[in-house]
Length: 188
Image (cartoon, rainbow, N blue to C red; front, top):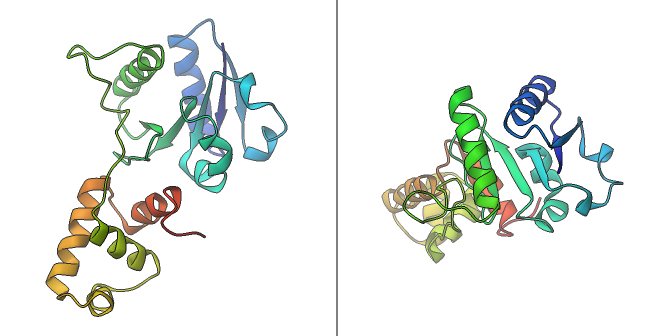
């Protein structure tokens, strides 16, 4: 089994490579510092791509061709529709457990309850109004401007924003923007 780590953060790449070698000793792990280094290789060459969220975001069409192979390295509980994520801002023990769960899930395993592992999140569904609010927020509008554009109160606009942040497990507006781009709500 061949695995590619595509991340411009050298320390993260080295640490992840070591963890993967410990967990999957039979795996051959290649590390790339940029997408351009892997761009020429055939996608079916690798069983999995561990890719930084920035590189995934910049080259989403490539990785969306192989959603079951792609694992995005994220900071926190960020979700990406139909793509598995791995929170790299946690203890080594938790990262190892999550990698084992991801590996097991990718090969048909289920959790003890018989459901897919929670890291493999189902699509997050925003309501039509939340989608409108998210799009306007991505365009740089403030709460008052969103309210005016949609003919709603500022309190309602803030409520929608809070709901969006909770549903997406977003910590910042940048997380909402990434979600919106990744799901085709807005383009760069």
